[in-house]
Length: 556
Image (cartoon, rainbow, N blue to C red; front, side):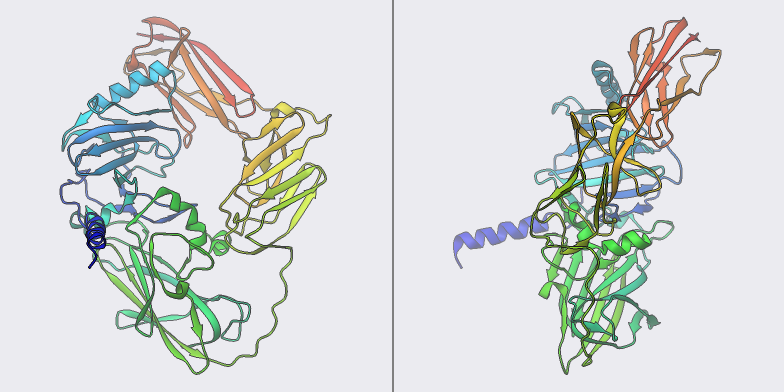
């Protein structure tokens, strides 16, 4: 064997092996590890990048450092991970903690000082190597519900520090700490015609396969087909004591005993999340709210989670062939479900499929359309496959089909606004085909208004002339150092852009939670003067409307 190749082979094996088990990490919380969201779980427009641990609707349980390390990043945001913490460890991994209600004492003081220095709540910090060391077992934060969280829980990640790839903590580190003896739930299995010439049970359309439970596995009646077919599955995992409907860990398909397709949710890069909408049946998701994972690939799908894709997972049913198709579904504890589907060739007559409505779009080409002072354009590979789009332009309005095709690149929309259009400063291009107008940051130069979007739908000019709503919730006669100042702020159209609070003309820190619309200032920051203080809050929306609240308060 060539020496260089042998060394590369050993290095590759070591690289793969290093993620098999991470033994030197303790659990990050002391309460029962109930998984409320698993690694790689299918979320809107992304794969879930960590493991969510339920806090049983409670905020405030401590979070502990699983190993020695240093805090190398802190991010405070109103959205996303909320109050997030990143700890770099000595073993080549970084752990991440999201949606915290607060940081550990030393870290909290560091963050608070930096927020006052920069006069902003949202902040991203990169402490020096020796500024914030942590020891295994130190309290580094507290479970919360900040940012985009839907309820109190800890979002926990393990990343390879060098590659920044996210690893499945449930499989590589916490498997022995989590009790799971339950199999995945099979919600539905589907069969797809891959080409216009494919016929399945006398139809050229996908449908759900009827399954029956037999001896701890599922079986279906024989499917009759001609041409190229593929399968999809809607499934979720459960865990002892948890109410979560979680993602699965691994799926493998076989055709007559030969592995055909395999997906393993073990490790991926953040950039791969953009392929989620190609991996699932996006149109079905938009119609039903349920996600079918396609066990086949059409066109390119550079997703490292897919480990095997013989013939792209597609199955050609030829004359005289009887096939046995099998799906195995595993969770991270190797609990398994099996589904068997017999497939038999049938010589169907092929009827020509009617052409869909709309303009044919070759996904490998650039496109640009312009009419009625409205233009729209996109680059090649903006879509994942060829599509038919219904496009209609009117003055100040664009109907760009409906949101049933996945989009991976930005689509540019331009509207030339008339000279006499009123309130241009308060006008933006918004998406108007939902229950609520969706605001888009609108680039303006004179009468030229532009946005970029990854959603199909209806767009038009929207004007927001209303000032933000400000309500002082804690409107008491007197306050003490232990009290908090609470405001509710809201802007119903374009949304909140900025807010700034002051005591006696000095900036004070307000935490913002967009879910509850609350701003909260802790008087324990000691920015007040004993006695009478002037409180002021300034709030602006995204098109420049503003509201200023001012009132005197007494703090004893």
